[in-house]
Amino acid sequence: MITGLDHIAVAVPDLEKAVKRFLEDFGLTYEGTEDVESAKTSTAFFPLPPTSIELVHPLNGEGPIAKYLEKKGGGLHHLCFRTDDIHADVARLKEKGYQFLADAPSPGAHDCLVIFIHPKSCDGVLIELSQPPAGH
Image (tube, rainbow, N blue to C red; front, top):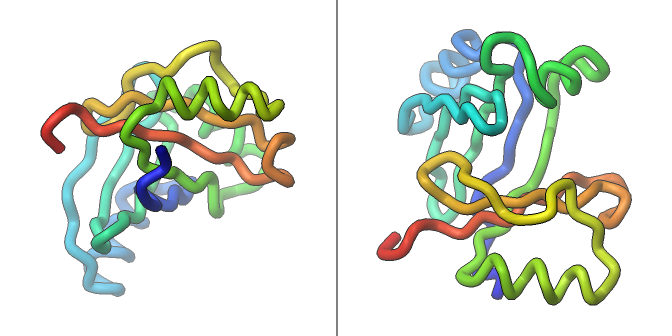
């Protein structure tokens, strides 16, 4: 079941500059960066309970974020909904006709299981589902 808005992701062409903006200019709490090899992204998180802002940047200049930045130059990338049972939510949404970008959830930032819903299924908005590890 969807339990909340986990984060809003912003694709950024310059991660250091964007981190500085959110940290120094906006005064947000900075949780640090994490490379997510499977997604070919470097991420930086700024918690704003009960949600977060996630900055996403291409890891080693490649992957889907690199392609997004080439097309759009940065901006709102996706919304992420937190779930307590990602497999049940995927099955339920597939029954309703939603298309996903992968066949099954995969590891994401913070040791979460994640999967993306194709933007064509959500009026052009990329939606991520994320299940935190047990105990979080």
